[in-house]
Picture 1 (tube, rainbow, N blue to C red):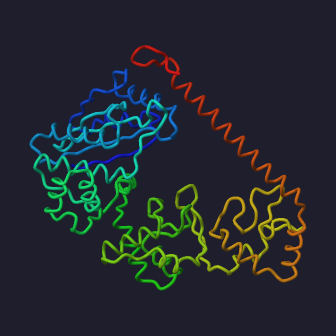
Picture 2 (picture 1 turned 180 degrees about the vertical axis):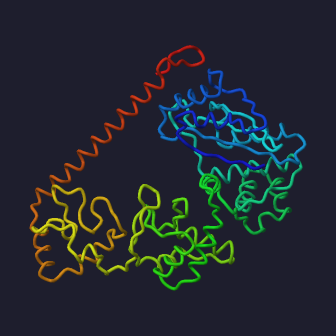
Picture 3 (picture 1 turned 30 degrees about the vertical axis):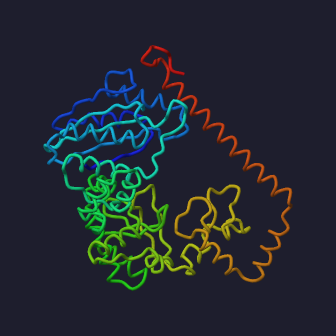
Length: 416
């Protein structure tokens, strides 16, 4: 029994339309529980509206189960899986809706659950993947199937014994699954969807990145090798990213590490990637796409802009990253919108590299700041944060009132 799940907000009709997709050979809407609407789109909307009072911003849990084709009683196996799943997570009374799909001759079922309880509490989904795997192993045992390989097999066996299911645990141990090497998926579901959307095979990016890594000895050589393969290296929000031909960014440490493990059998650690590439100054991503390339520079080397003094006024405003009152961004210390990978570390290096006289002036000016000014700035920041919280709460109440307008529960009582 293979299962998958995604937790989200559920706002909009995308989820319901996904469950009704016409590319399936068959689509059958399952009877909903705890909902008064008759069609699936309205049921998902009602489910989200009922969950707005919960203490979470992701109140919807989309779960699907895909029985093995060898199971004789496929419908019975699905029913047993859902019963065990609801017992495991305490969701036997939670509202849900869903659909059964037949695709490529295989039948699987989707359900969309509300995670918000009547008290406003939220269903605990800790370790949900391993817990759903445990449910699958029980169903496979009861229906005479072999266990599906899982990296959680050892912990599942221990958990089954602790819960009094020694029969299932013994069956799992006899299969050799707890001692087998952990299976590694070639692509995660997110990577698979990304590959389908961009049309660029992830293995192609991995092979090119690994070839560039093995064919270079330093950061600049790695960037040159990447560009020879039609890729580029940029600064993303979470670190260095490799940009493919479609403009999609892939985290460099993940691509290189996964490529080495897949094609060479030994993973290249993120620390090794940072050690080789950490000294590079690179252009950042522009709106998530691959913008114009800039020259790769080492930390400590001045750019042409810095050497020519561009961006600095005669009175000194704009130098050393100081923001002027009429400027939208500061200097090269990363103030305002960053254009390269200076960041805090590079800014610190530039401050340390100031001439002794200028460094002394800067230290004297900073130490002479009035304490009252610092206190006022702190109070202003707290006030802005409080205003932001109030605005967020008002927006939430407006959205909730709009979604509940004119809606009633199954007894005809208006939702509030």
